[in-house]
Length: 305
Image 1 (tube, rainbow, N blue to C red):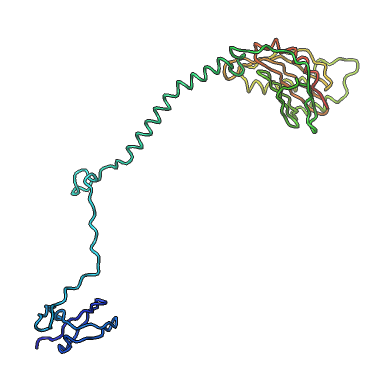
Image 2 (cartoon, rainbow, N blue to C red):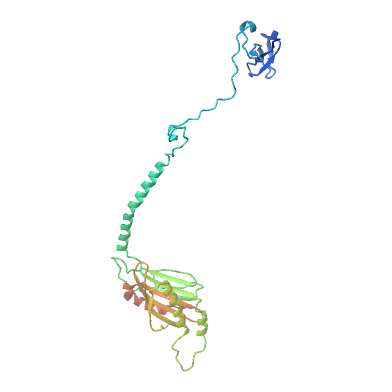
C-alpha cells in the first residue's frame, strides 16, 4: 500500500513534522513546537515530497521551505592583484608603498640641499667668532688686565686662589675651573703625589741646598700624562715660584688643538704635607704675551686655605 503520511509546516515557527491521518486536512491544529494554532494543509508526501493539489487539500499548496543557511559571499577578485590572471596565482607586488618611497626620496633631496647652507653657516661662525683654541676670529677683543678679584674655595676644599671678578668660575672640593674667552685656568687637588708630600715633610740636609725636590718628580710625572693626551706637547722649565703653599715647580708649555690651533700657558705644581696641586693657566698662543702678566699675578695666590 502506498504511504499516506504527509508533511506539514507550521507557518509561525516553520517547524516541519509528519501527519498520518488525512482527515485532519483543513482543520486547526496546535503546533507541538511553538503551540500556535494553524490550519493543516499538506506540504508534500514524506517520501517523495510531492505537492498536494488544491482538490485534495481544499486550498493552494505551501511554498517550499527556504534554507536557513546564508549563501556564501563570493570573493571579489581584483584584476590588478594578479600578474597573469587568477589562473597563475602569482600575486603582483602591492603599490601602496610607492608613495612612501617617493616621500623618503623627497626628504633625502631636501637634506642634501641643506648641506651647503650648513657649511656656509659654519664658515661664517668660524670667521666672526673663531675656532676654539685657534687664536680667535676676524673680530678679537683686546685683553685688559682686571682690577678686581674674587677668591675661589669651597668650604671643604684644601686650597684657594684669586681670579678676576666676573669671570665664569666653577668647581667642587678638589677641582676648580675659570674661563674667559680663550683663557682657561684649572686647578686639581690630586692624590698622586701624596707619598712625595710625606717625603717633603722630612728633614733636609743641614748646610746644603738641594738641587731637586720631591715636587720636581711629581711635576715630571704629571707632565708625562699630558704628553700622552697631547703627543705634540712641549714645555720649558722656569724658575721656582715663591708660593705660600710650599715647594713648587713651574714650566711654560705649548700644544696643538684638535682644530689645528695652538695653545700656550703655564703649568704649576705645588706640593706640601696637605695636598698636591696641579695648576694649568693657558690661552690661545697669539694672546699669551698679553695674558701672561695676569697668569704671573694669579699663580702666587694658589695655596692652602
